[in-house]
Amino acid sequence: MPEQAESHFNNTSGHSDPVWVHKMPYSAYPHAAFAPLNQSIKNTDVCIIGAGVAGISLAYELIARGGKQATLIEARHALSGETGRTSGHLSNALDDGYTNIEKKHGRKGAQIAAENHTWAIHRVGEISKELGIDCKFRYLNGYEISQFSRGDNRHITEVGNIKREADLAQELLGEDLVSFIEGLEPKFQCFEHTRMMSIEEDSKHDVVRVKTMGGHTITATDVVEATAVPLQRLSIIAEMSFYRTYCIAIRVPKGEIEDCLIYDEAEMYKYIRFTVCDEEDDYLVIGGCDHKVGQEQDAQDQYKELEEWVRARFPFAGSVDYKWSGQIYEPIDYMAFIGKNQGQEHTYVITGDSGNGLTHSVLAGRLIADEIAGIQNPWTSLYSPSRLASITKSLSTMVKHDLQITTQYKRYLQSDIKDIEDLAPNSGGVVHNGLAGQQPVAVYKDGKGNAHELSAVCPHMKGVMCWNAAEKSWDCPVNGSRFGWDGVCIEGPAKKGLTAIST
Image 1 (cartoon, rainbow, N blue to C red):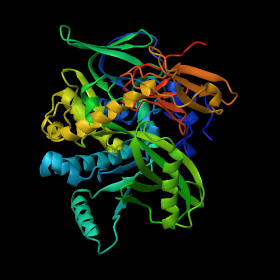
Image 2: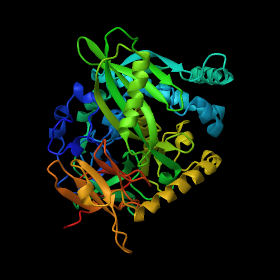
Image 3: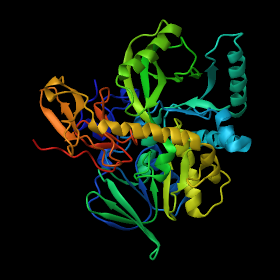
Image 4: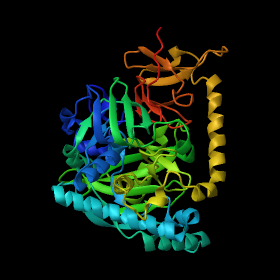
């Protein structure tokens, strides 16, 4: 059962809890040190929006170099986004594969990606040592599994691809992500429950103004959106797809399986790592079974697939203690967007983690700190949000994605349920009365049978919500925005919550 809190969605972006709360419950997070912003800030060097791994890593890099003041703001609690819901492993074996990356960015681009993700791994080790952070940092062997039988021509082809991948990806390890990030947090100024509503560049005065929902303004020289996805309407957002990904933590006896990373290249891609449980058992953490946001009805099918995979290969596995899901952002050309936002001079973005959020975030800390300082970095162009060549190569993929998104608007006239009375307790659905001009309504019925009605229309691009039963959230299939059952915005690019409907 999820740990009870004042509001669960203040701590995490889903109803379920990730395995990391087993050793570090939400109550152990350093929230007491981070109050809401209660006045405007007239001058700071860098305002960072988002207090997850990307924002915190960047703040640390800026401060460690000296001379820069970093101010973070977070709409909910620090680490409440996707950082705390990751599978928590570091790897330069990128999810999209170097074979695919080479097709879009050339051999040199693939080599640069391997080089800088390897750097990010070593950087985490350096910081952990410098600050004395006990995050279980260690180097591990990694194994990729072919999905085809020996002798099958497809097996031969896949093994060849895996060997080419291995030439580039040679550093693999696991770590306790939340402990690492928690160890960095005391190094900078952070304001929680401070939601950004707009960013305005003032070229006349060479400043950027960030306006918050609370009515305050932060004036900075530079601003960085480290919000997993930029809180804006189009451009970069149109160049990404949004996916839900699933994890379970299942007990295995200590010493029965090598502490390693495992990747299964089957159509339903899966990845495995291990973390501490207790004196007798470890947790095998397996993730995968991704699908586009709002386009699957029953998460239990994904959890079942993961559990069956483990039990078929490790029959001694014990109970499944944790099940949770997260969100990943997949650029159409496989590389993250890190750098100046399109058409901006002092506003930067970090997005498109593509399933490798930790290494991308640590890398982003260096790239953006370099760019702000005017330091030329040979890695910058690969991740530039304004890049064109690789995006142009991916236009057919973008068109297919856009067509699929367009079909989601048909939900504007559809209902999931015929009547609110049909809803079981602790469940939700969208109802539409079919009358022209009437908007669909998102209805959640709580455990006591009380119905909570919200507008089902996303405030971002007007997509119609889908009910996520596993996380008790409303998910937008158009641009991936997500909201708690009570309407609070827990995932961008939307900036505000769903509108309550008075009855």
